[in-house]
Image 1 (cartoon, one colour):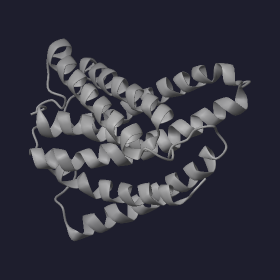
Image 2: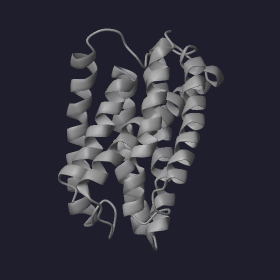
Image 3: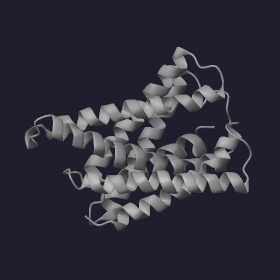
Image 4: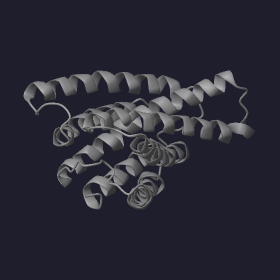
Length: 230
């Protein structure tokens, strides 16, 4: 397995970690952007995503996952990913407005350009951590602990996908707690909406590859936070 795709997504993740700073400032999370803050963000991203990508390279090589398929990059990865992202973004928007009756982020409005930049964080950084690293790691553990056969591979994949989706939803709760009082209703909303998105991104990750998952997540976030979500 080639190493350069893992190095590339590492570099993109560092950029994504910087891109989210204006949105965090707009939501009132953290202090204002400064040279010191940018330097700290870069250093943290270099270390965190460097470790994640390095471990992912070792983990993926021991599974049957193919995060970077060769050939037909646009046709088989970017286009399907973008199409899924549009569907996910519209689905979450409609569910939030009809079933839950609130905005995706309650009482918080940020500029569309900040939302667009923050989409890079979701699309790249979260997919590197949740799909390339966490999904691959949990899938490998299932392969080692439970008797693995090609005939039951799909069950391993779906159980892994659902478990990671739960982690993805739980991972969004701390940010919600910083925005103000959080009720059980809001917690359920965050878990359900993010869980649906994560299941979709996980499915396209194992079936199409990481670029497709990044594309889907990026487009979904753009739909929600830069196009129709505000």
